[in-house]
Length: 630
Ligand SMILES: [Zn+2]
Image (tube, rainbow, N blue to C red):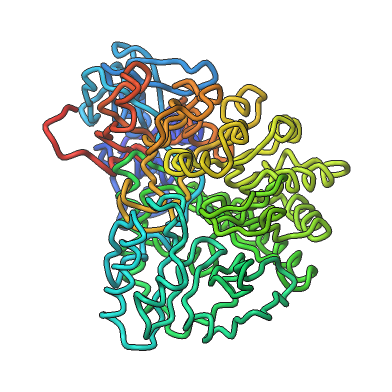
């Protein structure tokens, strides 16, 4: 064998260096080049010097190859409209992907220079490409399991609720619990809770709970079995009470933030873990079909985190999952603070994996606007819709300040993102005050503190969020589905700072879009609907179902802003903006191809946008089966 010259040996280093420069581990580099067709001779048995010579030959071979193919892309999409969502919101014709990352964006002619015999090349025929969409608020594990033992019909009227209860009564043994959960009264035609009497009549032999968020309407048997009577009082230090009819002083059956006191004895059957994983993977595939490549589970418990870990271990995740781990707010404060600190020791937090990571913690600060318990600065007002009889009632705040501030401090000290469910302006202000309190001696901004939902804000709240670096995850589908009831309850003017997206963008606060998906698979049939194009359309138009006007159109986003809302802003919210959220060289190649040009199409076409392709790290995870190109 010919002796190798010194400069040829140097090529080996260069070959390895090429890999290093590109941030590829040498083993991975060999693998990558081999996958792309380079024959890498493998030594079987050889002496030390022979091995060394072989290694040098290998090095020579692949460094030569890499020189020849330095421009070789795995994937090129060209002839389209690639919306990068970079700092200038620049738009290009083409994009190239190498080893799962974006290698180049630019003119088609330039990007096509990277083509080689192995490149997959897709002509976009003018289609729009966006960064993969991110949903910053969902509950995927619970959502995918809602229908595992029986399908749940679409419920739009009180009669649908009662029909469903009767059907369950027929399917279950007498005395077994019937649970109707997350059917929101704001979305029922009658805009009210079913009454205790109606529930009694529908299933007299069964305890029935109609639960929405922390609130619930019970029938008489359910009240009795739970030991809830006129003398009922909350005893665990949390908020809540049982509503009474002011005329008769009898329980109406409505429990405010007391669903935890209901003693459901026959809980829903549990599915085996394998079934859960199968359904979760199916849900993620459905997320991909509407362009979602990243999601944040905004309240995961350990069991749910284990499900994500298992899919991650099997390489079956098709969305990047961020997790806000659930932290309760009841019980000894020292234990709560210890459990917060413990989250920061989890490898899923420390290792910052591209696929699955814990970003912080989530807790609950108030009730909901869909159920009548959001904590407001002004009274709700006596309400038939929400079953409110007390004119001074302002909703329920779950965590007092002396508990909230140390919880926030503990999260910030641990480097964790703190977020709390805060719907009413009273809760939003309370959380902002807690952030401001901690910020006096410990800057909160670096941990990207968050407010989840943040529906009712105020000018001061918007400005304070911007000043402190507090981010918000907001659900436009709630505006779409609930505005007609909210206007009826509060009047138009009181909703001036309801989801004030434009104000948030203009003051520089980071707002990201989410769904709060909690039930069912199917982007429009789910509760809440997770179709991000419905969210985009709502953020842009402020139009709502069963409502003839636009709800405070002065808070509408431009199309560019709305795209940021579901891409780079959510990436910031989830501390992933170094990796995803825009199409810039070096970032992970999470991108989607759409059938509709969101920047120029008629406004009414936005919600119906179809995804043609979804790529995750350059890998095709969804392609629409139709004749539509590409
Ligand atoms: Zn939620």
